Image (cartoon, rainbow, N blue to C red):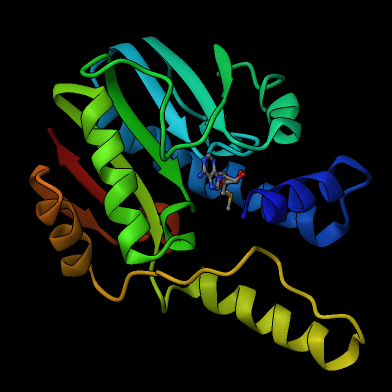
Length: 218
Ligand SMILES: C[S@@+](CC[C@H](N)C(=O)[O-])C[C@H]1O[C@@H](n2cnc3c(N)ncnc32)[C@H](O)[C@@H]1O
């Protein structure tokens, strides 16, 4: 898995093609605005907040920081070299989210975008347990988790299908997304099962119906 992501980000260190530039544009202009909205709605205006599986952290670019400290955490070292150039990021941590390098009850909130769908149900439970360990009581998690039939996912699938019809090499934009959500209720149930209070899930116009935003507190 780590090797897949290192290869994925390693390829992007060179020249990005037009399609990848378009995806970056979409993330910064559409998704980042929704990330800003939910961060301001659910995270306290000060404290330490960690993006677990940050990638380049492009989706943080529109966020009003106030007195928040933003940490970009990823297990791919090559992508963190790109994330650190993002003005919104205060520091980068090269670590595995199954074993976060933070003390119990030490972090004010955790968020991620397009990460949870890459794990099995069993691994998702382990990750949520780890998130719950490190966040403070009443701390919040915000997970931008793709819906199986979101327009963005359908668009990606169509592009992959078209390219694969004409290309000899298998083309795939992201590593396998094995756990996309099928409903908002499913998102709420996963958080409730992992002992997060007041689980909420939104799927709406704010990010052009790209992600289900699943929210819970400790
Ligand atoms: C699809 S990318 C999302 C990146 C970014 N959030 C975005 O929206 O562009 C998933 C990210 O999670 C990271 N990742 C996957 N498994 C991880 C793990 N166990 N620990 C830390 N990072 C991980 C990958 O390296 C990758 O950067």
